[in-house]
Image (cartoon, rainbow, N blue to C red):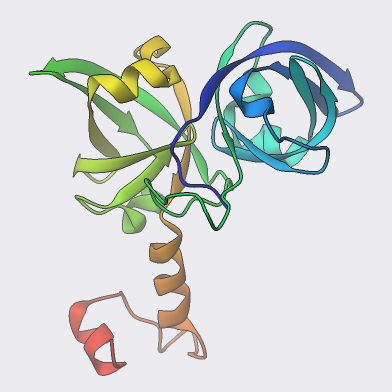
Length: 215
């Protein structure tokens, strides 16, 4: 579990393919403090297990499934990545609850300035629209962000200068692809609302539906 508050920008130092799987070596500094083999670490929002440590880098294995559902399959040497170690009970939850399980890949449609903020418009598959709510949370490349607006298949985020400087958002361009993880609470509400019902009994989630079930 993570918070979506990025601790450091790392760099892809090596990428070795073994059959259909990859091994990544990421150089870092702050993220290596207290890091151990077997620990979880988020790389651009995708949770990985540390398999080897060097004085200035760590190694992870990347499965074919992770490459399929995320942008990791398009990583190259020297790519900058967002890093966050797993949440501990003594760590402030400054963002929101993030699993490190990428749901989908989105595409940046536009980037514009609005006062001191950078506004990003990101396209996503329409099937995930039910998990998107204005002022709700979303994880983009491992960053916890607040949704400022949405349509059927796109959302906007308004990002303060500090967040841009401290994450890979500073390097993003129009048409870049990003990892998306939608809010876990929204996904559990959907699952609970359908639990124990036949297909014929399932209905769209609504305020009336929730009230009738004690929410």
